[in-house]
Length: 507
Picture 1 (cartoon, rainbow, N blue to C red):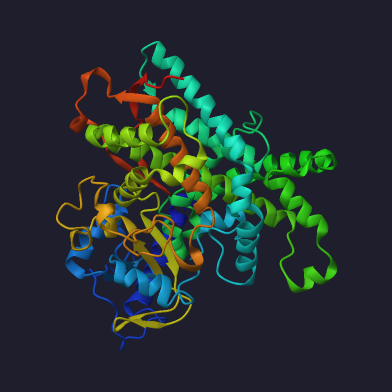
Picture 2: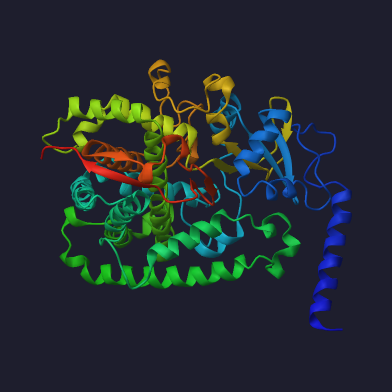
């Protein structure tokens, strides 16, 4: 019998054994408990076929199912029980009332290979995660650190404006997605690595591959018996990219170690800060707290780069897309900028807190186009929510996209882009205190880089709208602008955004 036939027979026998196990009902779910309502799962695969049929837009598929089964819905993905949350009230129960139960992340095979379960984003809840997050919050992403890089942001954003200004003078159509992506990459690399690019390693390509792998629906996560076969090739790709990022970070960290004695405090990047913490740890601190070995350091650096790389770019693209589709909104925002800033100078970060309509525009963009459409958590113990049993090790998905478009929450015009709704909805913020709007999550797993991300988004949008008038190319009408979504780890535009700028300032 040939090897391929033997492999096929082995897979068939494994699947048959799994089927027999499933038909006896999963051991970790008590048969006498009341699971939340949901679509009937098929043997072995559960409801995986439903997500697979959703054109790789699981947030939309799950939102449609929730209309039939309610805001707390049960599905099964292979052997894994899952709960989908689609209302602010239920999200508050998960992210606030019972935050300690749902503070963990499920283990995902691709990210386990790439970061070895370290870092902050995908690590399971526990002492390691708590101390790693504390490090990020206090040492890397504090308000003082964000402010420290203000000069760098000012320089990079002004460089972007000058490039767009040159293209505007030549009456060119600008690839807005590319320009926004480039300035975001430069700012991220300068903060984390101390340089705006490194052509030796193709860090941009590495991060895009990691994002694609982390966001892929890996069958082996839900049917572990198939893991040895790597049917989707994800394990092989994950090992290859893990080796590349390991080599790149080893080289960059090594260079920082060689040069750290000549670095001034005000010029320190994230690697310098982490190396200084590593050097200053004594034996007592190692016993009592978090000891940062280089493996942990590299995983955290990877989180910092990947977390900032695509997220800010994505929401800026969506926001500018909506402004192009709504010229009156664009005009009103420009009027606010002219009144607060004037046309004699460019926007400074000190202006941002005064731009109330810009704040509304950004909130509305996050409402309709959350970068993280599905927040992923895992239950650490059995629990009853709203009378329904949620077993330990259930995956819990908060459908932020569905909550943002729910007419019961946002009225009948929930699908429309209307920033003025936030003038009427006082108290709705972006920081996880109001569960109608959760772009950065909430509770223990809320995004530690929220302040940095918001500052970048506000500054770039303000500069592009203040410095330029924008129109769609080739006589395209606003209603014809393509708004197709594409989902990997973040929910981004499927196609680049193109527009034609005209410089409007007097300076």
